[in-house]
Amino acid sequence: MLPHYEQLAAPPALGSSPLLLEETEAPFSTGMWATIPRSSLPVIASINFDFKPLRSFLFPGISSSIRTHDGFGDAHAASANAVLAAVRTGLSRYKTNKVALTGWHSLGGAIAIIATAHLSVQIPGVQLRTITYIYGSPRVGNQAFVNFVNARSVMNRINHKDDLIPILPGRSLNFDHTEGEIHVVNSNAWVSYPGQDNTNKQCTIGYVGNIF
Image 1: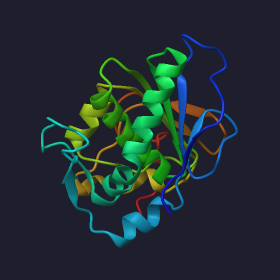
Image 2: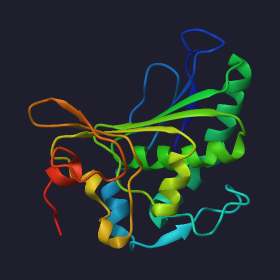
Image 3: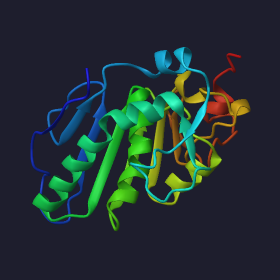
């Protein structure tokens, strides 16, 4: 079943308020939302850890060195045109150039990160903020992809305690994380450190044991 997109409600105020695009595995009561009827683990487990360039029909003119996990790229491509059309409609309707993308439960986070790159290419001048959270996003692409996305959006990755999803796929396979991790540790404190894949012991990469 393909994701379903629907404009449910206007932003709280017109003009300067950002349009909210939800990439989720469950419906939200406001904004635009997308249902993603699967999690990351089957995608990661059933497909080789192959990189593929961003699809040229979605990312015209982008270097083939910018690559994502093949399963995540396929999942994004299945809904990319519907998301783009919905965002363009919302931006026009509410006279804004700000878009907040939120993704949760792993695959929703992965798709939201790739959608960030897609919207930045397809809608020049758009201001993006991307947030992935409980349970956090896996690593999505290579270093070139991460650098590309970080340059185009304010990024926050909220990871929950000992969640394994954010340490997959492994760095040894040349996957990298976007910047902006906020880690909710076992004491329920929220720990924020700059950079990509920060190795501080309070960040996920130093907090969660390696499963390999």
